[in-house]
Amino acid sequence: MRVVIVSRIYRPEPAAASLFLGCVADALREQGVEVEVLTAKPLPGQGDGSRGERIRTFPVMRDRSGYVRGYVQYMSFDVPLLFRLLFARRPAVVFVEPPPTTGAVVRLVCAIRRIPYVYDAADIWADAAAYMQTSPLVVRVLRRVERFALRGARALVTISQGVADRVRSLGVRTPTTVSGFGADTLIFRYVEAPTEPVFLYAGTYTELHGASILISAFARFSETHAGYRLRFIGNGTGQDEMRHQARILGVELSVDFVSPIPAAELQPEFARAVASLSTQFPEPGYRYAFTSKIYSSLAVGCPVIFAGPGPTGSFIDQAAEQIEVGCAVDYEIEAIADAMRKAADHPLPAERRRALAEWTAEHHSMSSVAAQVAGVIADTARESGRDQRR
Image 1 (cartoon, helix red, strand yellow):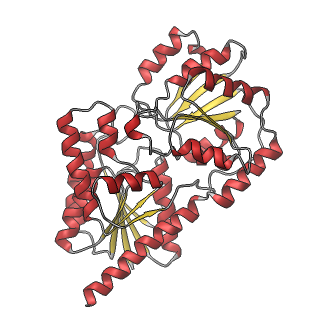
Image 2 (cartoon, rainbow, N blue to C red):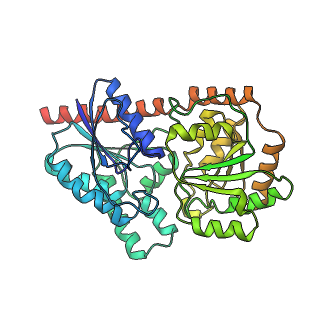
Image 3 (spheres, one colour):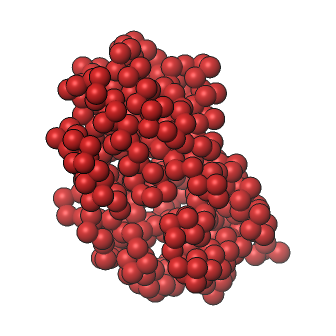
């Protein structure tokens, strides 16, 4: 059996989607499946992310931070993809990662070549665009393109029941598997390290995440706890405004903005941090989103402070009944600052951090999630083969 994975980002590029897709490729190869990945050419110096799969890259446009984000950047990947996939050696099935424009290209090519595809519906992009006050016309077009991509798939996989329910509400009846999400525990695992006075936010921060509230909360926290740092590692669309906010609040010398780094370098950052931070802006129409970045922190043994609504907070509350994972609080400055104070005054000792990492590896390893997704992909290929024989 041969599977093609299509995604604008793939390992070694540091992103949750890259790690997830790489783990899916590993799980498929463990089943004896031949895997080929069609992706973007990584940035210089990032190296090769292959663990045995064939990775075929193509140059793309990137934004100022080096990320493939924005409609022009997406099209620089999607247009060549049309021809790359059209003339690629025929696979049994294609597994495609958003954006929806990529999904639409895959649907067109797969329809021509009579190849089934599985779509990773990790999010609803049109909802995100609507919240970010994108032009109503653009949102309507994106909604149609996204439905087109979702409806053409033989199967969908998603990380949360909230997204699955939202897919159904959009009139999409494609069979959907809720796989959950997890951490790549080959990379993110416990290592003993001295805790430093740092609160860490690792990952993308956009208007949807609402991470700017962390600067206000940190300024409030710093009134009673001097000497701590707030560190952002990743891509952010509002970084200039956040830097200005830090200056206004007088904490600019204690707030770091670091470009994305490889997962192997991010792991020790979690190991040393007092706690990691994660946020979800309380937008009523977008409360089904799950903040998957928390798994990497937990897998290293670093507790999480999450602020916002939705399933992430519910997960943390439920997990806290079994193990010390951190806490979920309201999306309010004082609530976050108070959680920081408690984390600083009562840091998780080494033995409990180790226990947290072991619990996460047992219950929320990305390898188990990837194996489930690989099963959906393989089942889709087998069902398609039986249909063709009929």
